[in-house]
Length: 366
Image 1 (tube, helix red, strand yellow):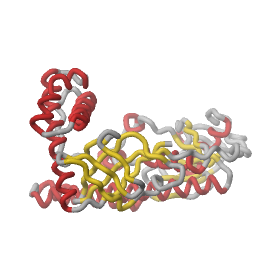
Image 2 (cartoon, helix red, strand yellow; image 1 turned 30 degrees about the vertical axis):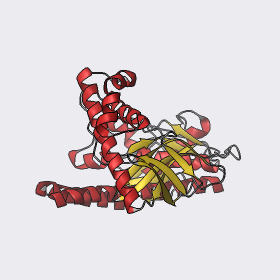
Image 3 (cartoon, helix red, strand yellow; image 1 turned 90 degrees about the vertical axis):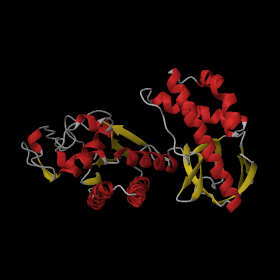
């Protein structure tokens, strides 16, 4: 399994200046390449390289491989959307591959700059990059953030084989009000996350109205802080779900919510909640943590999971079974409970039988 880690670097003041100058030159070169690609309406790296390679070497003082990486960066960005000309920040991330980067043991890395190579100490190795048996693959990205340098590396970590065939599945219902509810009834509430997002939205509106330099700096800071908070919440939830599944020898069943933002219609007041809902990140965290722990994960169709009676003697599906967001009550047999818990039970059932539980959930699947 490939995992991306951010390794913190500790360059000296002279090394930091050299790295910053290199980042500015590479991004300026990428902007020049983007202009040529946009004018010629081509994202072909070979064709663009013939047009700009010599110019980049002489004007920006780049090495051969740095020029190639700048061309690749601009062409890949232009290929994503050919209707606009890409633009890169002066201190945007730049790619280092094996030709311009090498590791000096496990405590330092050699990086090429405009004035030659610098050997930069690695202040923090990360969780997976320091694991025995893990190896770093491919290129790395040099990132400058908050006056600090980081190296984003891809680490190849061995997955654990499934220790057992799951006897049952832990169904997990994902949502906005409750970020995750499992089939045992445990709920991870999203109230705090939504409150922080709404508070930040109000603050953003005030800062955007000011439009001063300090307001823009604070906007960036708040955006990153909110992102870190939401990511931490998803890490905590995913770790808990995987730990529970591993301890109980269960697999994990998740909803396949791909394209839900295009299918679901909400009121204007809830639109921001829907589009800031980080369900895909939570699913990604659960998937990779489960793979590293040897816990199987399966995706199931989420249709009608909160409207289906899980009683195997009933299995009735009706919109009226869910009179409101929080509650479920079967209009045929009277079975009642929290709607998210009922949905999680049905998700676990669908994983167990491999098909929609039209006839209700069997006892063994629950």
